[in-house]
Image 1 (cartoon, rainbow over the protein chains, first blue to last red):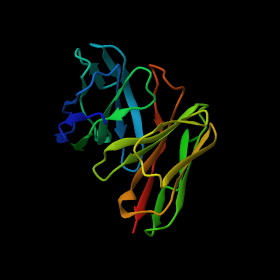
Image 2 (cartoon, rainbow over the protein chains, first blue to last red):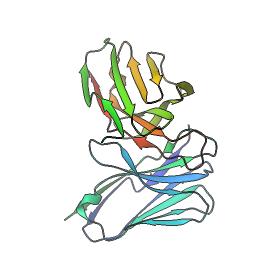
Image 3 (cartoon, rainbow over the protein chains, first blue to last red):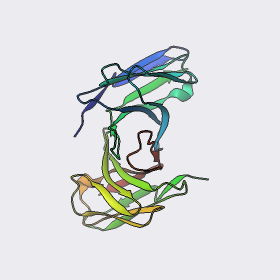
Image 4 (tube, each protein chain N blue to C red):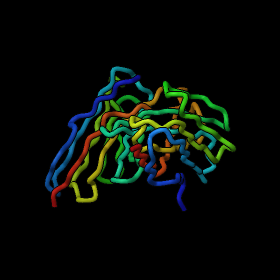
Length: 111
Length: 115
């Protein structure tokens, strides 16, 4: 299967700090997505990216589709306690039906 | 209103039993999926159905059998449960297959524990 590696694996930050995480793949994807999973819930879509180099924001979240199409980045500015959760990147091929998920970054925000 | 709902939320059972997990979506989507999340939180696709037709079947033991009575439902039946089947199973749906802007919406998961 496809290998998508996320780093860091986990992060502990103070409330108000900015966060950066990234995702790299051995394959070229046509779509990159970022999901967040809260405890006991399913992943929820945060941002979708469709073109290499694309930079997209959703509130305090900003994500970028890497130029090589093999990576993507997610930044969270001014973190708050409810940002706690596991963040997953996901890649999709054109014409494919499913997503390939990254290994996840677990974020803990200390108030 | 829950968009993708799956039941039960928790399922505890003995090895060797047969169990089913149900999933329903009210989004009008025509593609549904089952994903498995292991103890390390890795999410991997198991099956995908489009308009009741099986289109993805990853290397999953044939003890797992999905059934789609209509495009709003995709159930997962598991025979002869094994310890290694313990995981969280997520149902998901999307608008249509092979779309470049396909976005998956997930249910809240079924935590299966096999004792």
